[in-house]
Length: 425
Image (cartoon, rainbow, N blue to C red; front, side):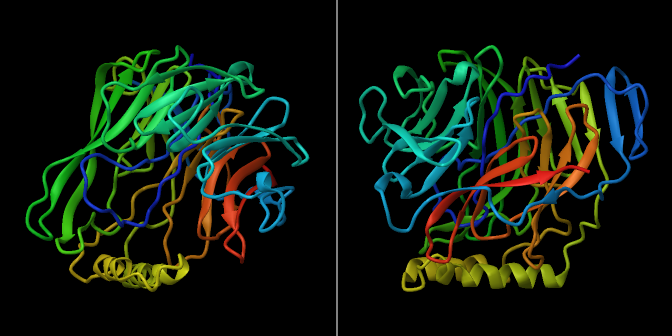
């Protein structure tokens, strides 16, 4: 039986496709799955729950039921003008403590700020620097048992532990040093760290494609690397423009996704609507598989046109229309020379809720103004589809049993941490 305990983690991925070539990788945010024993009866939405060569397979026949979401946020942190502690500058992450307080990582100040359940500021800790309890480049935070707050710093990659009152406990640095932020970071129940980091071959001539791999490595509780668990395909990569130093992948390229939950590792090649749950000491074959159905994945002309229009409009959206490099880079990314996949990936990011439910994001088509996530129970049974606020950007930080916590910007480009309630049918 798999552990039902769910260690909350939050991941986000920036899908701009715009990268200045460098060794190493960007963060890919994925989250977690935990499975338990199947129900005695198979629900009508499930085709089969069966064992095959020692692998438990759950096949979900339908994924059409909808979650009901409130239109207005019941919690809103962030002000355009007011006390400094309510003003954010580049929110990195947020998580909920057991007493209902919200911890928010503010990368502008390099602080972690705690807010009471009603949104009132409680306290702040951290700050910019290289001393104990200080940060140079905050990225993620976790709430561990006993409300211990764990914060990641990217320069170099290290972790700091704090009490729920902001007192510094200890820190550890990851070895070996990764040149750029990994695609995924998360912890097993025993304290081991799982890192998914990308490795690419050297760039060739412009538009010459090379393979990328995603290495899944395990580090001990002291953050020193123990071994490599798997090497997964991570699509292709090419230099688009040498003068502008712009590189990227084919449009709608499929990449592998990795997540961690309790004492298991979840991996998907995203070529099919299928997730595999693996033993943390060997990822040669899964112990559990979850499958589901979905819409047609064919990439059409209107999909490509919508993406190119979206890319060309990006400088104006982010206030960089007067930046010649940025404007030129977006034009390169929208170039007809860029390869286009025949099919969309089977899914996008994977998150796990604090209650153990797994959330899988539909791959976003730019011509559709919606952002939809599918919810699966800890047993792998489909529950409902949730449409979250469709704004640029909308970053999901945490799913609860009846809420989603994330970051969005208002009409004044002010960052907010907002929570929306929903119910499952």
